[in-house]
Length: 288
Image (tube, rainbow, N blue to C red; front, side, top):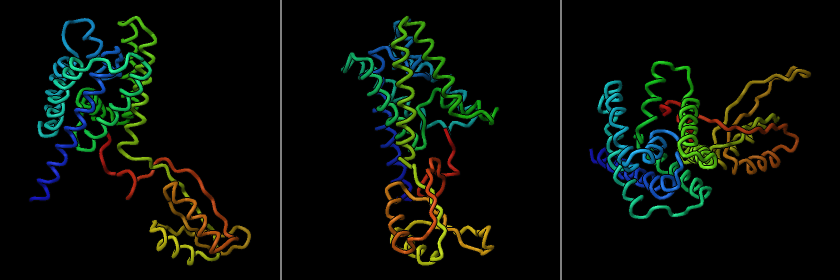
């Protein structure tokens, strides 16, 4: 029971910190520089220039019908944490905007810093099994009806629409391009925040000393190794092909072991950018 309470407390702290960082990105970098980075946040930035309502307040107002729809589709328990995050993001965005304003008036720097902070904040919220609301819920509903559509494509489409609208409303193509840059930066950085730099090396090793090599890989490096049965086309002899996936920083150590155990070994090294399983991305976790 105490362990459960500890985990919930940890998640709440992570959600809170993530929501505050997300708010700082909007209130101190994006909103003051009229950068609309897609989603409900971007729409709120645009609308705040058309009607006398602060961006943080608009984020709350726009999310209310979306949250009601989400509760109807998925149940109120699923979106309680999202309600909590929005309840922080809305007032904190207004606070940062009023208290600090534009930290920089350079649109490029604002887009760069805002994109990174948005990614860090959203990544922390997602890690705590919550969302920042808005487009996340809408896309989840769309995918429940049309599952073959890819999440990333839907996000990209909606963000592109918002960024295009910002160019028309602000009559400034530069602002729209910087907003588009912010969207790209947010996507790239958030992937690192959520999954880490999981690019790795896929290594196949063909050797007559496969047993010795595997022992070294298991004991010295502690990496998982799999045998793949192979047959030499010329000799007709069966061989055990060693297959393993290792982090990039471990790849040179694997090569050193191969050189020491069997300098005549045949080794194929290729890049692996999408890896699921222990130590990498969770195959069964739901993608947002």
